[in-house]
Image (cartoon, rainbow, N blue to C red; front, side):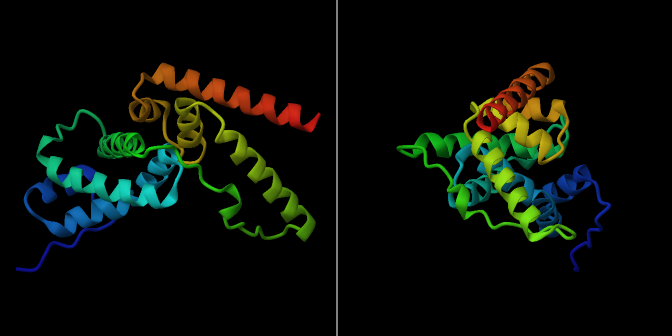
Length: 188
């Protein structure tokens, strides 16, 4: 029997139902759809690219085992990212000391239409902001990055950081306020 083909418009809920029934292609489609976000969430917690890869792999193994336990109370994406976040926190606790990512290891991206001088300034500013984001407390850092980089709603951010939507808004606001203060102080 040929495995069912899954179109991009298949909902996450439909993929979960098919995966529960043993459809490996549906599980692959679900993992593929959410892998990048899962990796960025893990990276936001563990701050190490290699460890984030391990976390995501372990998290998706847990997801595979927990498919029958998914009740549909929240969107599949939120449920997956909570598992990723919890796995990342577990991994972080198991590491003897927290390793920070080297901000200089990030490959710069060239922007069309900018002069080389403007491009350099843009990359310097981006590195400066990333450095300060790394200094934020964990919940503020996650709220800022999940909201600005991933475009998640405050409800989704709250679920991922283990708080209410209102608390996610407060963490985001405090994080942005601190970033503005630090950036202004450095420029002065």
